[in-house]
Amino acid sequence: MTLPLPDPARPTLHRTFRLQWEDMQQRWVLLYPEGMVTLNDSAAAILQRCDGAHTLDMLIDDLQSVFGVQGIAPEVHAFVKHAFERGWLV
Image (cartoon, rainbow, N blue to C red; front, side):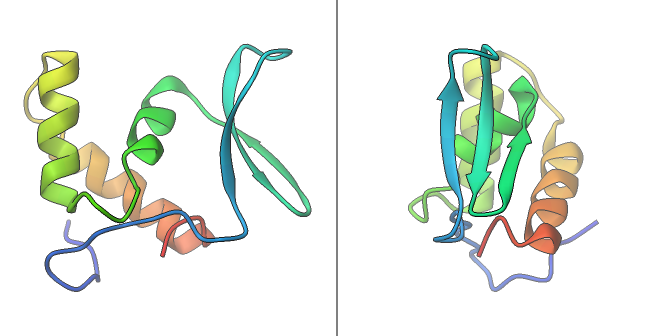
């Protein structure tokens, strides 16, 4: 699965969304004017790296290094595609 993004893609949060740690829920959340999305740890780790400075390949390499795993590219691509479709990323 490939993303319909220019190469190299440098995903970043859309300006109407804010990634934030919620103490009450002990979870990362994505806040937007109409509400909030509660994120699992994997989604939060990906979105934390969507800062416009990292290409998608850099983001995947960083995640694999930090978490000591390999072969996560398909899952990361799928999540980033989902986040683009939801308008979370630009």
